[in-house]
Image (cartoon, rainbow, N blue to C red):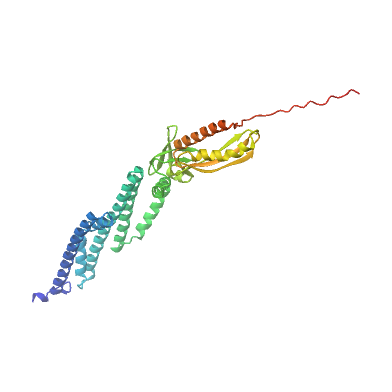
Length: 354
């Protein structure tokens, strides 16, 4: 009978059962994939959550050849196949899994890169460009790892290949170590964000506004107009002062009055200065004290905060404080001290001749 025929040591009935299992699994997975995509797509349109978008994209990138490979492998597992055909089925399944893993990994990397790039685009266009470049490197690394895993599972000895790639990688890394240092420094700047485009920073004795953050260099526009270019690695090896991150400015200044100022007026000066500062908008008074007896003046030290990081606002407020101090001191008859010297002349007593 036809059912008694055997092929590769398996009766025709076993082959028919394996075929039914393979076809049923492929059809079931395809139907489940379609229903899940439809459900997640409808859910994604109703919510702002991006995770359902990612899940839907992962399912859309699930290829039919992967489902077919899964079904073939499941059907072949029901049969008693010789080593040669079984290795062929296993190799096809491994190859399909590697390719499908590459598609899935690419979807995940693209999801995170696009989300991070959109988040940074409005505030830091250069940072978005760096994120896209790092996404390309991530995809390259993903394909390399999956290729090595696939070859290893197919029985290829990758030890010599990995060793060769390691030696070659070391040679390339030594040749381009400065470039790689700047590249990883750029990654650190993008992720840690010590500054961004538009920030005013001071690096050693150089200062300017950040106008570009690239893969190798960061560029500032100085106050005098020229462009200052730093390599990213050198920039992170030094101390960076970011004035854009200030929330307020601390102001310390001194006032000196003459030594002939009466005690009552001298004692009233700290309160007078406090009232002047608190009358200004966007200020917070800290202290005002009679600090020291100077060489030619009685010195008062004043500390207050301007509640705005903008330098022009700080100068406007401090100018108003200085003008009001000048006006009130004049009204109270308090004189500002300036460098003076008083010479006392004493006539020596006359000597009587012997």
